[in-house]
Amino acid sequence: MGLHDPLLDAAVPVHSSESLVIAIGKPAPWVFLSRVKGHLDVAGARVIDQAVRAQTAAEKRYMIILNDWSAMTDYEGAARVLLTDLARAVLPVCEAVHILLSSQRVAFGVRAANLVLHRLTAHTKAHTFSAALLAAVEHPPRLRPGA
Image (tube, rainbow, N blue to C red; front, side, top):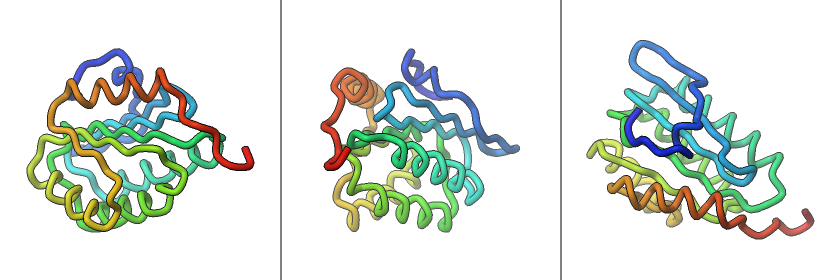
């Protein structure tokens, strides 16, 4: 499923269809990791949405979200809207959001979302994404107020 990295390879498949595989991992309590291969539909976006919301609700630290979408070929408009709404909802409790991209269509959607969100870091090189993942695991973010 794209890039091979011991931390990334720990993500386990949680959803699959004929044209889509989604794997989710939690390399540290404050790190959410998704890997998507294929065409992301609304059902797949809902899987990511539910997993992010569950992990952010349970974690006392600010979150770091990493999405390896280097093997995502495209996504439905409704899936993009759902993920943008998700990002808007969880950004107040996130320290960073990193996305690894290779598809020009997916990159266009991420750039469009970032015009509104202003907090997404897009990576086109696997080594910079892997470095961000390693840093996220090794350096816990601060606790949220009231935690």
